[in-house]
Length: 210
Length: 210
DNA sequence: AGTATTTTGTTGCTTTTGCAACAGAAAAAC
DNA sequence: GTTTTTCTGTTGCAAAAGCAACAAAATACT
Image 1 (cartoon, each protein chain N blue to C red):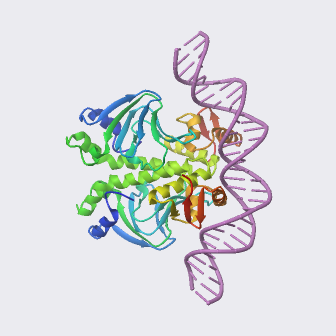
Image 2: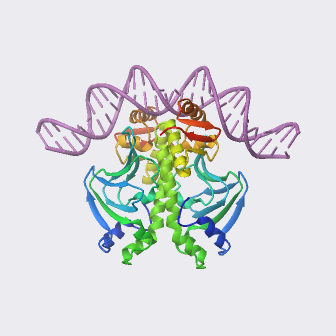
Image 3: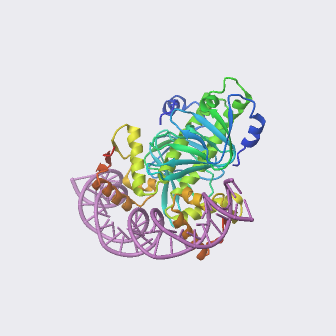
């Protein structure tokens, strides 16, 4: 994230200043929240990693989104239309701040500085989310596994300002994130290596073109 | 859209109240805007239809997003990381309001009611966009063309509260929206008909299951 | 340190998808 | 109202992706 509003610092200063905010800790594999129509939860992940997952009727799991430090999530971002439930699952120990969206939007009745500041920067926080979603859509609309991989690698390379970078999650999860079969993705990675598009050492990738 | 904030009415009341807002009309096939890093445009489509498209190096066109009445778009929603330029193209005659994001965020120096109200409801406007993007991602992450089609049909059925509904754009564009080959999609539609999952008459679809 | 579990890397086979091409229908342009 | 263009519907063939299964490596667990 590169916002003018630094969520991390803001939280450090204010996390105890409003008693309407819940701070909870979740262990690995625990369910942080499930998305239900009527709840209007708005969460900020202080530390740890979590996934937004959907289980369809056949039990197939799809990772819809990955969350890490300072990411925001919650039902406010989702109009639940499908029958399948959505869960946010902790991938590691997670610290989470949980608010009601109404408290932010209509300003908390306590009129505390915490909600006031959060309210002011809310558009920026959400805009950042939109940007990430747009990138995700751009990747997912690519026609082939190869294009998805190269698109994603370009993204990481641009972010780190480096031709060499580390894939930030497991290859199994990457396949899920790009919505392709893992073995097909591995095959494509091998081809990209053989055709000298990339160098690969575990999760360390180097782009060799351009 | 089903926001508590009615963009359409708001615009009618206020569209001439601030002279920092540009109102422009575009004819079919005209480029409304291109996404460039430094510009911070924020646009509201008053009437008409437009697409956000990307052309890759081979000239392949991808429709990344569709916009219709009261949809918002602009570079603020996008961190341009790819080399390919993004364009918003009018699919029919379009009326567009164009602002600078800074004017909304920091409040317009004129301190006009228009920017004040827009600023207040900005989170809600953007949240609606996030919801749409999330739905799109959910569709795009489905593994097969069949699942994408059924997922999309479910969405339309839920929205219209009806098992019978009309696909709101051309089948050519639908294929593009679901990011699948048009002929493959047509084949799958035929199979869905033959296997009695759906009834189809042109763009009118009826769901036959459940 | 030793065991259990998850992740990586690979492959043969099957199914799905994409590509190309074309004819008829529908819509838009003149 | 006629022509031109776009959209729909179809198909054969080729290419890509998915599935299943397994061994080796890495990681987590106790």
